[in-house]
View 1 (cartoon, protein in one colour):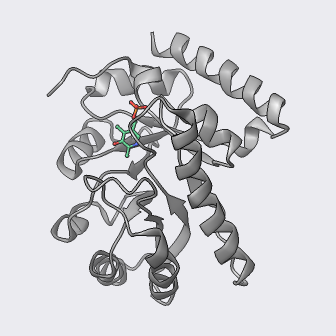
View 2: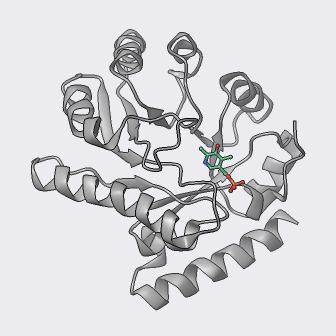
Length: 228
Ligand SMILES: *Cc1c(COP(=O)(O)O)cnc(C)c1O
């Protein structure tokens, strides 16, 4: 099931990349496994996936325990509360959702204590939906600048959640906002960011067209999630 879905997804990705002149190898796939049990992740591992994204710290920590030793790279993609950072700092591969200086300070503090450098993305709210987390586009560069100054954090790039719509024009507008910020900041630094995490099941084609380097895909791999 997951293997078939993955094959179909990879074909779509490859076709899109060929059409827009991008190398499919330049796109990283994060399998969003939230709400699905460890057995489904085993299936995805067997199909060749290595990077998994979860929204909730406790759920991610439990699955990590169940899947110990499989070499999974865990991505924290949901809103992260400062008081939860300590539970993931030792092993999280990439935190996609740093959106405040307070959260970054906690990541810095815990990274120092753990004796590691933590890779993060700065989450930007590009769709101006009040229900979404993320720093406002106008404040993103200042946040990136301040987090960059923290010695035990590496800012790898930017992340956004596109609008919940099938209107490709609106999706494109949001992704273009992120890309423009990314290019602008990279033009003004000697340490360019490399990751643009944008695109989910309903909007990943547009995200690729607008330069995404990391897609976060759940439904297209694991099927629909039952409403919790
Ligand atoms: C759930 C989720 C996804 C995956 O969404 P699908 O539509 O199932 O592909 C990606 N990113 C974030 C932040 C999510 O919460």
